[in-house]
Amino acid sequence: MRQDAGMEQDAGMEQKPPATGTRLRVHARCVDCGRETGSAADEPVVLASVVKVLLVLEFARQMAAGQLDGTERVVVPSAARLGGTGTAGCLDDVRMSLRDLAGFALSVSDNAAADVLFDRVGVDTVGLLAAELGLHRTRVVASPSTLLADMLEDVGAGDLAEFAAVYPTLAPERLRAMRIRDPLRTNGSTARDMTRLLTLVWTDRAGPPEACARLRRLMAHQVNWHRLAAAFPEEVAVAAKSGTLPGVRNEIGVVRYPDGGRYAVAVFLETPALGERRADLDRLIGATGHTAVTALRGCCGAAAAD
Image (cartoon, rainbow, N blue to C red):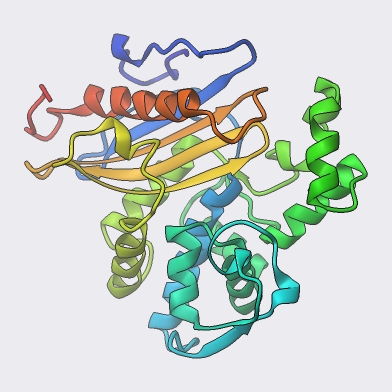
């Protein structure tokens, strides 16, 4: 990994990817003083399910403004199932409040729940939110169901089972040509944009304080702890959101130490490895995030040795 131009050089930021073709982009910043460090932090990255942070922020803002009633109960029909966790994996129709769907979208990355929320708040509106917050390298153009349709169409598969059979046989250039792998043709951003977003949320500058607080609470309940959270001691609080697609593994979050130090961190990993159970890659994301945060410790008087 190389150090970004204009950033303080941190020898500890050097990481060796575990396999040929693996690429890492990372950025971390102190929430309170703004000191930052990173590597390839301005390179475009695929957001995958990390986009749900922006989605739920917009939902929370609309709730705070009285445009949406979060207690409204809606039906997530079985016909809308995308597969995966939460309501997306249920066999029958599910009736749930909008605010609980927002919780599922972040805690277990429920794609069906996210689709319902995108329908309510609008994909274009989420994109406009990114622009309003100064996330100039961030684009939001598709809901989970649209991404799935793009993915199947790009490989000529009729369903997920056929996709799973075809995907491992594709040549590298065919994989790179898929829309879900191209941050300029799908939901994309940069590591630096994502730490800016988190900093705005954690300082109540991304919307009404109650909207920011709602998002912070929901991110603190993410079930997946195998990436960033696994790299920090139990007493360090981590609120995060992961994202996973074939060849893409990401996580963004805020790390809060008992001494009050708060650090926004974003790690984006692109790999030729296709398997979902890649503990080595999850550990690499955690270790990379930990290294970046450690490089910032002491910037606001917080302990430098952890």
